[in-house]
Length: 345
Ligand code: SF4
Image 1: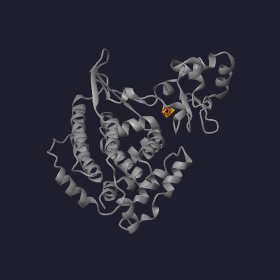
Image 2: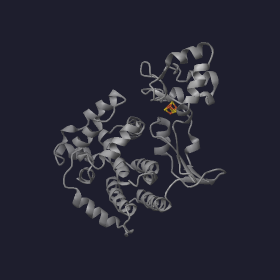
Image 3: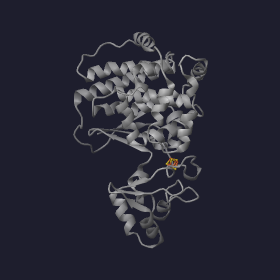
Image 4: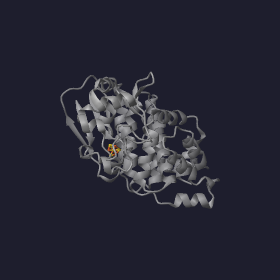
């Protein structure tokens, strides 16, 4: 079986008490059945505390947050369960976070989640290279071969576009969106056609006939909100920028798109592109990438911190991801015209 991972994957170490946004903060932790049974059976003070804070809503056990944090969190930023029983006693979510595993049967891709500040730092600041190794194990391929071949080939092409220094970040996102439509046609049964970046750029400019950042931010405000500060940031973003070609909006666009967006875009492509093998829907995943970059750019601030906050709010809530993938075909904020207009005003 082939196992691949970015070369920084094994560099990750939880920074615990130095973490500016602990994963023990803000959300209830789902506890798998094995760990829940273990926790309920523990003797002594730790067991009593766990029995007190472990809830079950019928869909499974979870640790309900207290004062905005996991009830097992200590003042020094460490976990009481880990401190008393070691890393292996943690529930699956806490044991594996922020590690991602995409298992396709005969090959597995590993990665890190952007929602962890330390992982975000590695993802966005470390030179990127995928390491591929052959390891024992694996199963039968768990996908349609021809669909996966299209996705693997097209992802390589998309990654090459990210590395193209002649494309600005907005141009790169626009070209990726149009390229995703070309690949989508192949997934839908059409023949592969040669893709021209310069033609795609001309097409993208011709589609960019007027967009609304307000509509895009309003769409994100309607999603499930974890941290009230996130809602504040979405609300404080330049909603006075209608219509798109006003001076206020131009000033938002004038903020430079730094090259740190390249590893950010690569992260989204590595995380979502191949997932289209499950439902043949690539365009909505690339729209998620484009919308994410636009929202992060509009919110401003430190790019690594804003991207991490975005990921924690959006990517770590499957309902939010689902809402974006569904909205990609129905929400006015996520039409090609709106996204391209915001990129290429
Ligand atoms: S978010 Fe990341 S660095 Fe922070 S406590 Fe959790 S795993 Fe550690």
